[in-house]
Amino acid sequence: KNIIKVVIKLGVLHRNGLFSQEELKQAERFKSKFRMAGMAIISFYEVDFSYDRNYLTSALNESHKCLQSIVSKHLTDKSLSRIDSVFGFFSNEQFLDTIFRTDSEYRDILGRIVADLNKAIENGDL
Image 1 (cartoon, rainbow, N blue to C red):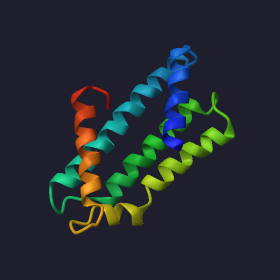
Image 2: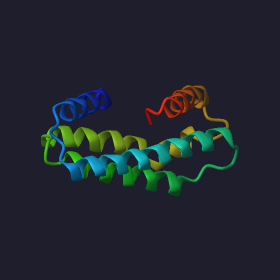
Image 3: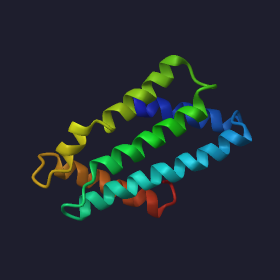
């Protein structure tokens, strides 16, 4: 729910031309960092024993900081806390360790997420 709300607000801000040139440059940096995190997730899923928690949490934390710097002037504290909540959940080390275990009960779900990430990268959406 929080992801959807944040994405919609970002879309509205962008569509209405409310981002400065510097914020748009920062948005490109965010897209690049977030794409790298997505590619790491794909790699960690597809290549056994390649999971690197420190790399992934660092990539997600950098993406989080980058996004916060773009939207901090535009969104309310409540919306900013939604972003914190989303990144906090997906950067949680225990969560990451659990989903990337080769015998994880969430392996099928992660597989579907990886398929969607692959599609997003192929389409240029990520």
